[in-house]
Image (cartoon, rainbow, N blue to C red; front, side, top):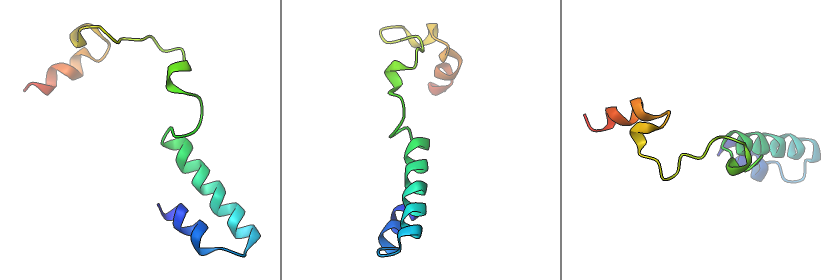
Length: 65
């Protein structure tokens, strides 16, 4: 959010605006709002699998405790 506020606060300053927009873009990439879609990364699809039979099975087992 601080990056978005920086864009708001630097109106009229082209160099500062470019830097602020770059920071916003970096934040969005880190949050996976931008970049390759998750469904095109080539990871196996475990939809319709019993959770205990997936790579996350150990983690899933801890949720019921």
